[in-house]
Amino acid sequence: MAVRQIENLIALLEYFAERQEPATLADIARDFGWPRSSAHNILITLSYAGYLYEPKARGGYYPSSRWTQLGQAFSDGEPLPEALRNIIVDLGKRTGETAWISAPSGLYAVFLAVVESLAAVRYAAQVGNRVPIHITASGQALMSQMPERDREILLRKASYGNWGRNAARSIEEVRQQMAEAAERGWFKSASYFSPDLGGVAVPIVLGSRVFSVTVAGPIYRMEDRFAPYAEEIYAAIARELGADHCARTLKGIRLP
Image (cartoon, rainbow, N blue to C red; front, side, top):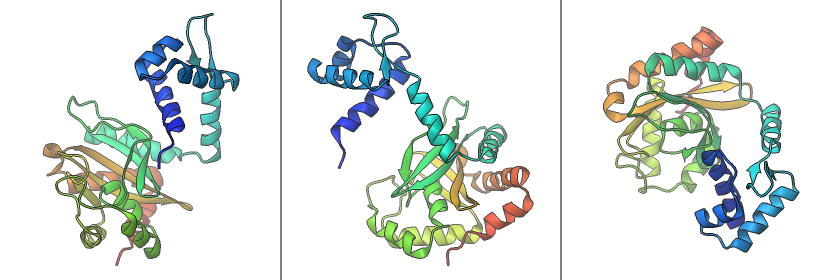
């Protein structure tokens, strides 16, 4: 169940990120439709904690660098390997499509790093995006590296029939898709989650951490390129981490 106060905080941070300039109490109350008293309490609380400040007297509030310090501390504790960033930069240049790195988070795959295509029509993705783990190429690649018991728990908790027109409608369909993907060595999505979008993904294991590398774009550009782009992903992994790691990644797709 979502917590309203936390949702409001997230919405406020995204508001400032998009606005790129200070906002007054009146601006925020108006733009969000919040009561002035509620908006005032949020702003004052964040100001007292040092997360908002007023660049000019009565000129409105703006996030302080404390957010940056907090984010850096998170990254320092569990940094994304630079090799993974290099892989998706390489893939973005070679394919012209959007590429990203995902990691598992419960019933979702979360985007940790993104290189977005420059094409006018593209897969629009941002760091922090979440997609269902059981019906997407990114998510199924991640699940392929999980112990069977953990994977089955996720499949039983997941919902079916509420996604894209080609999405799996049952646990059995997901199992079949993943078995076929494990045999060929890569995972795909074709209007499974996002209408008219397709993607191809490969899992990658670094130490104790599991990630997936995905290339995605409009289905009319992707449908004939799933296999070639899978080869591009493996080639990018080999260039960055060595052919041995690429072979181990392929072997590591361990579904029955």
